Image (tube, helix red, strand yellow):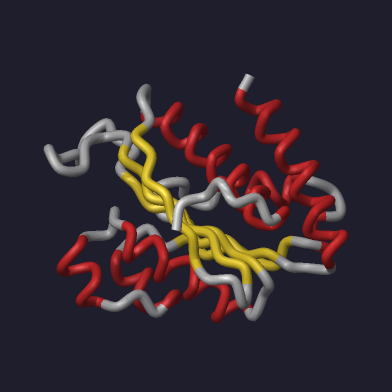
Length: 169
């Protein structure tokens, strides 16, 4: 079950962040704070989780995360450039060591030919190591797409914190 995969990933992520003495933040759009909720469901998460930014609207992305309005206008909220700016913005605003961002089209409406329902952009940043990003197209209901997005965001953060090199750039 996906909930168990999320829990297992969080256990490893908590250990990896704690071992490094790092704090993490999240910047979320289509997941609506679900990643942060999963993190804070764990007892002791304050040792490694600092805060989450729920930036569902474009205005929230610009106000809270300093996403450039031109990037939103040119590429749209569901894009690599915006995901990267969200992750960097969360890192900078929170003053943490690592952050992740999720922005996508969870459906059931809102998809386009270019960005169909299930299209989700992820970005991860570790201070001093640059930003990595990845686009995934998930299948299923809105709830399923959001669940899969939460898991993928956490798995990507774990890989990056551990120093695995299989993430996109």
